[in-house]
Length: 432
Ligand SMILES: Nc1ncnc2c1ncn2[C@@H]1O[C@H](COP(=O)(O)OP(=O)(O)OP(=O)(O)O)[C@@H](O)[C@H]1O
Image (cartoon, rainbow, N blue to C red; front, side):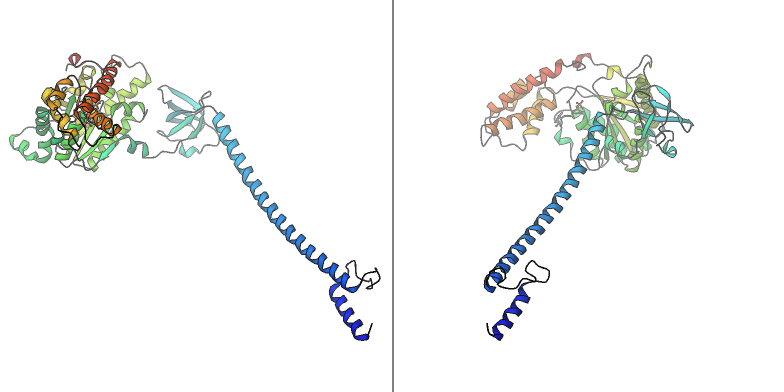
């Protein structure tokens, strides 16, 4: 080997054989290999090394990803476990704090009526335990387990407030006398109060509409609100006492407060009989609760000023069960019967609900009015919709008489079933 080749080999060797490697200290040829084959092996080993390093970093990142996944799943398991525990715990009873005797002894009224002297969990903030606060009670010991945060929401949800009503008298079939009565008792006092002042009489405070379900009582109240540009506030009596147990009277106050704020307004109380039914004696807590709600309603009605742009319309299917206190002068002293539609009114109601439908030339409204004897406005509306549905199902361009007749059959069957339900008395049993 010449000097030049030797020094070149050495420089190459020092470059390829890293200090400390297995080849360090071994002379080329010592292992019986040529410099080239050592170089080749070194290259191979180096490329294998970088491949393995790459694999190693890939596995490392996979490991990190799996560790993250593990943490995520563990968190999910904990969440599901606590959800499962929550599902397994027995339900809590809702109550209202009546009085605080000592910080750990509280009088509460449970949602179904009776009052109890109960203990309080030590984790509860005493400052929140004020009379009127809603609390959750343990089912067995009745100890207060938590204080339910009070919000305004339940009251807002309890009433339907419509600031601008779209229903007008033209959309009501028949009921001309009833419309006139409402115009005199509600519309005129709101629009021209001076006419009453001039003559020196007080307009009626409340109007009670009574009649079978679906005869148009809500529709009438809405149309008056539209004519007077009044805010329409609707509450349902049964909801006041069943859904907002313990809060019925508070809610009545809120309703009148809202009506004052949004005046002119019409308060429409549907299902008045749920809060104003005559009671022989108050045996249960629930009865007393209904009584409190009614008392608050009477107090609000007695207290409000007739000149303050608020009118009350109530509706009931059961005037026969009402407490006479509610019908006294100055309360619901104007009674308006909303009857089932006669033959002429039935024709008109059907026409109103078909106004936007594409009808064939063969529709005989007189015949339809005849075959719908005993049906309410709501039933007639359902017939129009059902006839449309039959036409859609048959992929027709127009709704034909046969679709209407089919719809009459379907709706009258449903109406018959409805009439068999308890509580739906025939109209002849009603009296005031
Ligand atoms: N006289 C009528 N003219 C036109 N549509 C009517 C008439 N009566 C009832 N309807 C229709 O029937 C539907 C139900 O009527 P509404 O809610 O006014 O009855 P209601 O007497 O208040 O019933 P409920 O006692 O069950 O509350 C309304 O949407 C309305 O379209």
